[in-house]
Length: 199
Picture 1 (cartoon, one colour):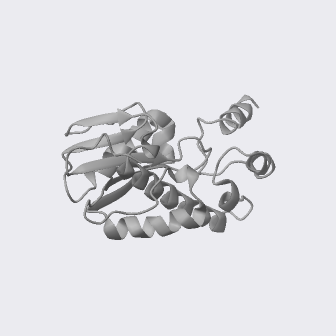
Picture 2: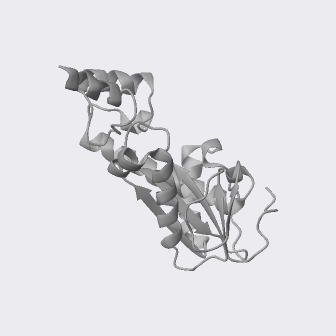
Picture 3: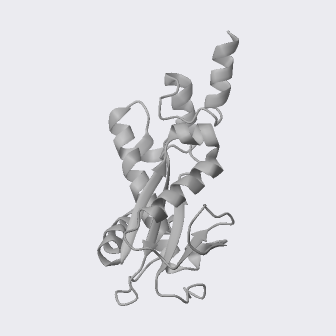
């Protein structure tokens, strides 16, 4: 992985996790890596096994110059829309860094509102190590919340489907109804709400 995009020392990578699921907040992380403490094995979190992500999550927190994890709530997703909520979570993650970066590199094609120079990089999580690190932090943090959801709502297999619209999750919604953690502007929850109101 060549960091052709990062020429300055204090570069923060930013990525999100959880834009697509039907439940839970969207998470974002920002990471400033230490060039003197390289982390072997960084890659797009989606390409890594769960155990590999978990071990890298610990390493990143130990070795990075600064890291921050933030979220936008289900209420914010429903009020703003998922894109704006994602950008808000990214903005919060950057603002949470203990060191102000000279530049921010964001995975994707949209930028949050920031006070420092930034650029969006499509597939940045596979091109820039700091973005890869951010993708891992955001993904692992969100998955931890899904395990907590499974404890709170044992009728729902959040530990398996992680809130995504799998056949199993859709069957659970159909059988048990939707929860406070479900996004009301996402189908099938949106359709169920409309159906209820029409009765």
